[in-house]
Length: 70
Image 1 (tube, helix red, strand yellow):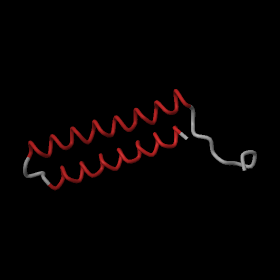
Image 2 (cartoon, rainbow, N blue to C red; image 1 turned 180 degrees about the horizontal axis):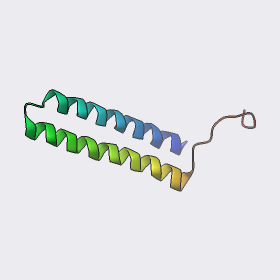
Image 3 (cartoon, one colour; image 1 turned 90 degrees about the horizontal axis):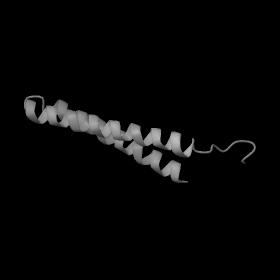
Image 4 (cartoon, helix red, strand yellow; image 1 turned 120 degrees about the vertical axis):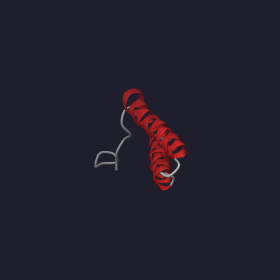
């Protein structure tokens, strides 16, 4: 389903953001690099959140298998 695929990509973006935050911590002695990584990480995180909102608002929540759908 399209919703599931988009939500999976959003989760991957959250992971990328987390890894960029870790890299920023590792490079804290280089303030310009650390600040750039933090900025990029925030942008990626916001993009992931926007994708999640887009799915919810435009496509509805993904259907969950339940007793009626099983």
